[in-house]
Image (cartoon, rainbow, N blue to C red; front, side, top):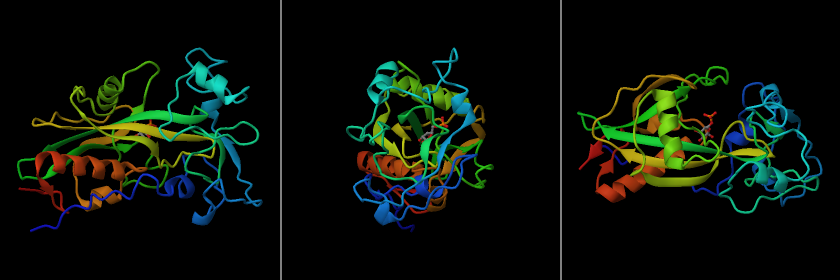
Length: 279
Ligand code: RP5
């Protein structure tokens, strides 16, 4: 008999790791930030991280371009930006540095600016987690290979088919839209279970711009076919085993573990380390 899948979350307040060690495509090297120096409350006079904002962000300044999705590079105050475009932080009040730039709620990342992210401060995403139990009794989840995985040197990495929350969009609408855009599957998330709201340890995060998500779980009986589209190079139903969890993008493994933990509590089922659903 399999031992149980490790679903214990490492906690949502743990130090971010990928946001310090990994990089988005085109990023300069981050200044190395040791665990002891992550917190903004630690005085560190030697902290002089590079500044980076991607060309694609600058080219999509919504003040300069119709349909632009990014904040302007120069801004009066963070509060003004919040008024112009909804941005929600589930991490408490957004702190600012002495120059008025929003500060990453999990601390230093070794990089200033916005990198590939359009918003100063939180960038809100949604992550649909859709599972079913296959005919052999394995728990499978809808996953993708992101288009940027090869360029980041992690071809085996897998991710949830998540994406950005559009302005004025309901979270359940965004979950359906993103799933459909990345996998072509059409599902209704109105009855889905809320799993997590908050910071994502994303490789694109910087000191001044970071990802936050709303993650929901839906367990279904009849899985639709998944075909890769939009930001996905591959899409498929992956067995939720320890190995799959170990190669997930950003902090997606933490989200999946939490969803499995909730599902086990709700159904009384137990998922083994190999993804097999035990009675
Ligand atoms: C992650 O980035 C989120 O958890 C979500 O899966 C994803 C959204 O960004 P894009 O896929 O739109 O680049 O932080």
